[in-house]
Length: 281
Image (cartoon, rainbow, N blue to C red; front, side, top):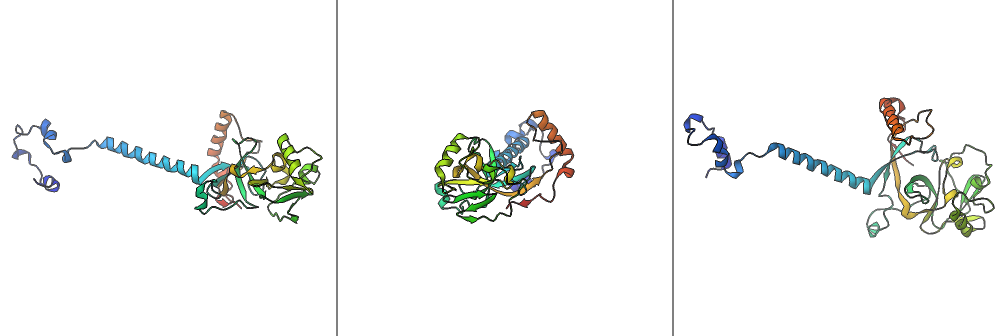
């Protein structure tokens, strides 16, 4: 039998073969299986679906294990992070607390790191703060100055907007004033203060916002467990100005659609180009 190439290389002349000998409607049945026409449309759809599913799987893997996008909704980290900054967070920086951590190039959470974490009081919410105390540290604030293990902490990133007139916020820890909104923190705080210093327990971290006078942080609700830490912000991939009349991001569906439409039609005017693609430190 001739090869496939030989079979297709010679053109068939219509008047050489009587039409009654090979009726047109039976020609497809007489061809070998390898030469029958394939349903091109079906193959195209299947190939497209396979490509799409592969893209989705890769995207889900990346979002689940490698990076995740977050938006800054509050001014607690000014001027390091501003309202309207969109971040890519590296979820592989610190590992996941499993056996694989011993074989991967993960590193420990360090003092000074900016971290994204599940808010301990409500884990469904995500917070971003800076690590001020690691396990074993002894912390205190005196007139806004942070001391770690008796040494003043150099904080070029810290931002202040008010005078030192809040006894609890500016001179922490204080056991003679309310510890904030969670009574559990008030009880824990009293147990961990020694000689006017707060001792950070194992596998917990004390975090604060860079905007010290306007940050709802560990001073008010307590430590962040290591298990709650999601990762470290890698870069600001986009940054937009907040409309002047917008106090807080809209929560209703109509408000969100209006906000999106405004951003889409004013993208060049509202984008902070000097912050886009900036690394987070």
